[in-house]
Length: 432
Image (tube, rainbow, N blue to C red; front, side):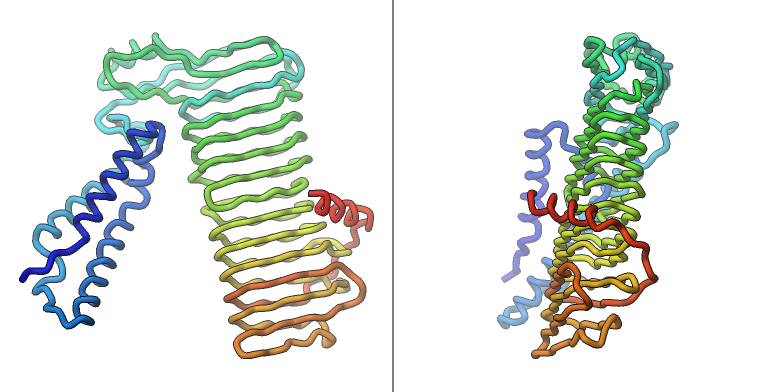
């Protein structure tokens, strides 16, 4: 009797689930996921077929003559053509065209550009909302008590006639009063499918606060003193020279960067979340990994899968990783308390010469190395190793990884930071 595979039913269920999700959530960037992750379908398919054959062989059942049938090979070729087509369409340059809009992928349209130039007088400290429209936005603080929007509007349509009609029926509008301003794209319905996006440079008063709700594209905000909030989804996010609090939340396929921020910064992404007191230096989340230089805690980081490298940080640090390596080089003395957890990953801690601390470190499967002091002894019990002890009188460094190595090494001598700054960080950590 011919044995039937469960792969085809599972594939049908998966396709049906994707189409249902698209119907229930029209703004879901389904094409982005298909363009980026379609090879996983082939990997999963192959893994299921291999598992089936292994199970049949283990149970003494007859094996198929061919692991993959002729019909399945046809479907494989179809998936490859579909997946590579989505990937190519998603990454075409602006001059290549259409596009039948589906998420961020268009096919068969031409692109036509139209200038944008809008001015509006406002107060010195307005709240500016960038509403949910597609495209790249750069927002810059200025000394003028006005909002100035310049750039271009890009319309994807089958020909210039329909693009001109869509341009005449759409406009970037600056609405509200002088204290609360909203910048949005207003557009009438078009008889033909068109796609409108923009590349805008927006000048706002330096004292402004900014809320940017994104659908796609890049957003860059620099030189404002008020609160900055970015949410939704898109590509790159950059905030720089910000005096107020910064909050970024959403799904971003590019990098998220904060530089020279004088207040609290919080980030909630699909894979990684963090909160930090301020960032005099630079912090970047890119492809899930996080790197930071010259940041001030208390700092709290959680991630499902990421490699973290933090240098020049001060005050308390709390890190929880599911998977990933952690490399830490604190900046100034005295150290702040550290609580470091990794389910799977190596932890390397490079402490300044002259640092004082107590340590409680353990790994269930890995090695612990210590070059800092002979008073710190590594104890081994089966596959588990622990390191406990003190070097002078200092804060607790608590480290645990289930699978991975722990390394405590000496770095360069670091300058001192006032003790009251460390105590303030500890108190803020306790209050949280």
